[in-house]
Image (tube, rainbow, N blue to C red; front, side):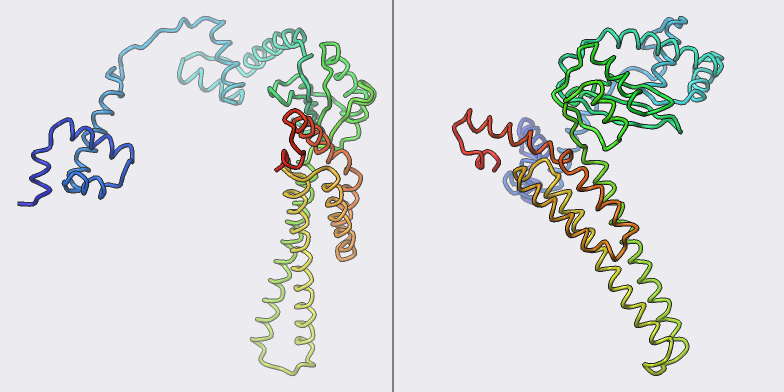
Length: 369
């Protein structure tokens, strides 16, 4: 008889349970557990399956599927809550709300009813929002999003993600931004600084409303612009490779000719263009990655070093601008124009690290490490 079978037969129930627990916990491999207790691996799997079945029985509900769990009073107020919840929590469309209420609850509602309910909820929420104390917000995030062609001005607390501005407007100029920022200031909003993109109306409105409150640059938009350039050049390089392969195949089908033949000369030019396109795409991709990971990343060197690296990236872009000025120039111009605002976060980080270093009597370089 197999020794493992004999050992398993004489194993007490408590030991079997402990063995299953160890297998479920992954405290050892099945082979190690089997060797340690002198049983077979099949026996380990059997005990594990028994333990899993016992856990399933313990946690699965014994309530029949058709037993009534609770009852809800279907009042008009409750239906209004359902409509608001479906649109805000479930991101449902107006028609989706109409279909759900009709198919599951048997309640016919119109699109206009859904609209009226949401408009009423918006008015109630606006009254509540206007009574909020915004004095605790230290960093504001401002941006312009769009609902179709309609600009929506947005302001969010960086710490809590509370949205203190969300306004659909006909314009996104300085006056429009200034009015909303003044309204927020009346509720106590006095941030240490804000973060926004390079939108002129947004920044001019903040200067008009809040004076010298700093507006740091968000790195998302400029990084997306740089990566868009790198992706475009990579596609152009791939296109150059495709053209070279097509021409090469055409020449191959026509038969071998002399090096001075027109197709051969054309192939040499196409190969040269392909090489230049790939070199340019590779260089721009490298510069973009340096900008993202070495210059604009939160964890990185001091501000002065970041500024030097930033200028280096701009210089390298300028050196390659003649190769594709139409595509490279907008990025090369945007970067130096936004340098100080894009790197403003590094100055804040340096100051915080210096304060922490003084508090713990450490060198600032050690705090950064």
